[in-house]
Length: 120
Image: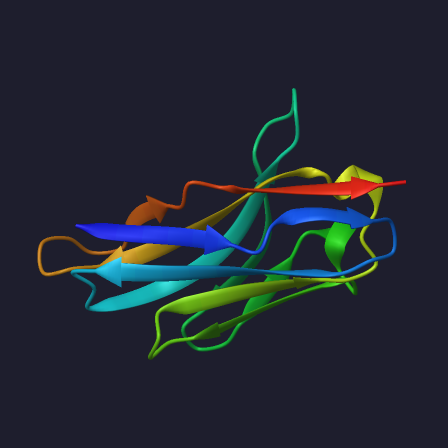
């Protein structure tokens, strides 16, 4: 079994910064893609940043230049540094990992989510 645990959410003023962390643990052989997603109230969950184990990244247009995804493959950990936060960044942020275990290839796992609230 694999668990993802996010941390680092909270309340911040517009223009401020937060860094989210995601730690994967359990029966992990490797993780291909780690990604961050968010879901605002009444909205669908959307992917905002992805990073492969080779270091390739991709960002949603709305966060390009403000958010930075990084990861430590050896520690099965990913971070999302969020700068210049705006009120419309308010959402629950989720970490996702595509994990290879002894039983399965590239299976999707999700964290429990962490709330980010940006006040104006």
